[in-house]
Amino acid sequence: MPFSVSWHTLLEHLDELPADATLITPLSHSRLHIIDIQEHRVIVQFDESSEKRPLQREQFGTLYHQIQTAHDGFDLDRLPPDADPYPAVLSVHPRFEIDEDAGVIAETDGPTTTQLANTAHEPDTDDDRTEPEGLDVYSDALLLIDALERHDVTDLPDLETATLVNLYTLLSDVQRDANDFRQEVADVLLSRLHHDRPVAGQYGSVQRTSRRNRSLKDDEDVISMLEAEGIDRERVMSVDRQKVDEALEVTTLTESDVYEIDESEYVRKAGGRRRRQGVAPPGLEGPACRQRGDRS
Figure 1: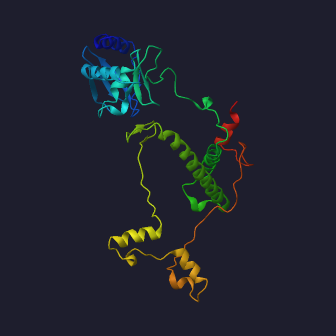
Figure 2: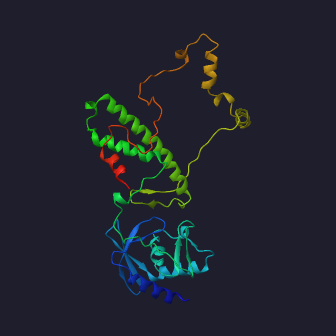
């Protein structure tokens, strides 16, 4: 099928979109609206900008031919900079579909989906939410919210010691559970991010990056290779703390003889975690806990 036919089919479907229709770009997940549809271009506007941007027919044609010649779809990572809106708009065509998991846009003969955001209903309300089971950070966060609502935490010195203990332990639980859950989310998200391209959500953006960790090989192997290059072993030898501690046990030296000691005091959680099974402890009757009990 020639591109001219596909182009006019695309324009027809764009013209049928509701005035408030929102498209989501596949890589950056930016939200955009169709402002105007013309014979040789489509004008869009991003949610985060008042600037109107024209998307030219020729560029759609280039993407169309790339898809036609690609095997199993055109790799979205090959898009030029700032070309993210083109596949989002092209997905409105009934024969083109974006597979974000595979990171491609492809032509298909079957039913397709678009990058059109769901605007057919209002945002979820509290009544639509369901409590996730087996997620510690959720129940801990509800208890923390309840404590924050029942006490004036803007003036901590005025709070009773027991209240401060409750706040500290709840904050510790939320921090630990949130970090564990954050890592689980990151493990899944990593497979969906492509080559340092930021992906935006409602509350922020993330991107894939890399980190180098180094650890020395066997000591003697390292020293031998360095000595072969003219580096004296004394230049790279260092004091091993574990060996120093072992030596202190068989000498008359004290710890302060070989260590600079700087003592500081801090608070830590002393008791074990009390598992919460969705039931608030006696006395907790704040809005957060009532909300959970109100759900049917």
